[in-house]
Length: 356
Ligand code: BGC
Image (cartoon, rainbow, N blue to C red; front, side, top):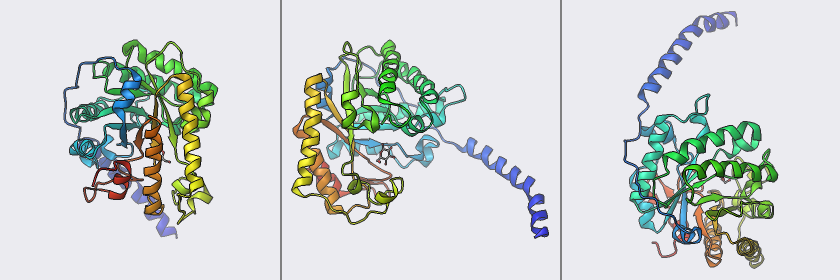
């Protein structure tokens, strides 16, 4: 025992030194995204027209190591073209930017270089690009007070940088506000964020969703500025949760433990219709177009039901004129396997029925 402790003590400085050397090497080895020229030529687009252009989309890049080191990226440049050619019109880019900010909430050049690469290559592949600030867990779990300066700072930096990009690039204020951000606080915060964006992007369409994880139930509490006509409203749909999140490690215990749960009975389908009718009614009453920004069922759900649910949600959304973005391209809920470079055919067919 004693020997072990002494050895450990002796070894500690060497461990510390080698860790330091490793860290320094890692920092130096970090490779950056290739430099690109940002696409230019902004023109105002009516938000209803833009929603029609968005039509079918997919969430990308949220959990990709590419943000820390380009050479470690799972996502490849050619995927933008593949996504477009498969029949998608939009990528919703999930930005977990806070972790790259300095103590003064400044985003480093290396991070912007990566985002420029995304915006330029997605635009070149004729895709609409939604820049979605995705630090929802930080904002929901810490506090409104801690989240707010970071979010404001994010848009103070991101909005001017992309001010000249085409109207096909849109901004989404914050994914799934929830937890410590109450619906009332969100209504205040969204006004402040929008004001920051409007200084440099007076008519770019901005995507905004309700609180409580962008749930349709919270739409009734969402207060948008009546004098801003350049807003697309978003909501997320993962119901029934015990089906869509069965086996998902981050879900509550009961749901996490679920397996072999099927979906598709007539009464289950009718619930979806009723839910989406409610959103369509809100959209008409408030005269705002709708983007279903996330929906999907976890990889552990039975494939037949997954494909059925995905196809059904997609159709019910499209019937009501909503654009949508599937959750997600890579990582989990995958529609594309980056290891084999192949589409997950049942999911792709469910989303883009004419694909093969
Ligand atoms: C989160 C993901 C999660 C998904 C479904 C997204 O908003 O970023 O981490 O897998 O929702 O739960």
